[in-house]
Image 1: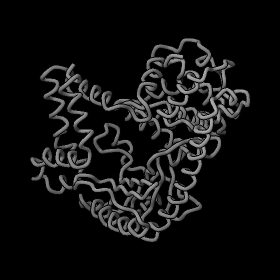
Image 2 (image 1 turned 90 degrees about the vertical axis):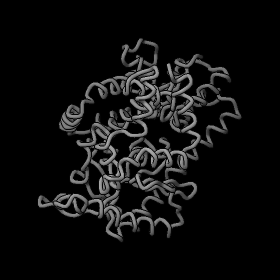
Image 3 (image 1 turned 45 degrees about the horizontal axis):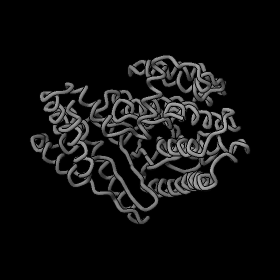
Image 4 (image 1 turned 60 degrees about the vertical axis):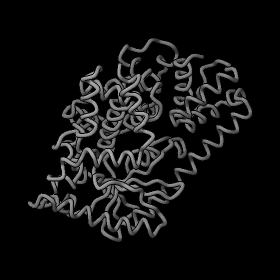
Length: 418
């Protein structure tokens, strides 16, 4: 099988798992083809749900080479164990933070894993958590402490105080804080096998859609099981899923796991009694952000390849836009490639050639004072430091990501020159 055939067969397996049965297309695959399917599933972090599609048909499972069968089954088991242990650890951390008045909301994979038809079908890497110290608004909804203060930096002070408590809680639980520069606002903690990232914002303030999602807390719903924990409504969760996918797709690229997430949401929406009101809310929010067309293509592709009908998987040609997206997803892997990231950034900053290279480097070192001040509170509080930003940024990258920097330089000044 070639790359696109392997991708379509993988879609068969996943669609079968989502529907609760096996996912074969009637063919007997050779051993080499099974290894290609597994390699593609691994590259896109969908091994567990693909394996569920295999094991749904005993005859299909018998086709898989024995050594690969054992390896694939172990990977699926590890996905389940990882989900359960991460959930227990996240609840412990949330409870400890709540004792200090810090509220949290799980994001991304931690939420999506619970949306799948069964535990252990959706992999996750980091545990992303939104945090804030909350206070009541006049209308009874929640907002971050200091959000209603007329002083420009009141909310920053509240977050700084919360970060001090978070550091203490995580250290007490045996976590080591990942070194960051003064420019970074996210908090990252490591304790094998866990990696937690605590965010004060859903998105980077440099995102063009940040103004639409900069204050998610008033629409959050308190959880009933763990004090101090919140979650988005299903509609807002879906909007964030599209925004998150679009961010990766237009940067370094993203893989088919996002497409599987889309199919999971679509199946959930189909069973909602209030689905029309939910659809109207989603449509309105995406329209304000200019993402209606992107979402329509994602939805159409997920329906064709992973929906109840299987015309896309059975060889009927996909529309051009959907086909182009599918091939891009297949090439990208779970979260894209540096090569794709550089190519997309060069297109945005001026294309190829010497002038394009100069613009690209300048934008990487100094993206503009407005963006810097929005993303990095240090420079907002002390704007006189702005001329030092390029040197601080370069130093941070050299210290924390030297290999990635070298790879990026090779792409920009070597074959990335175009």
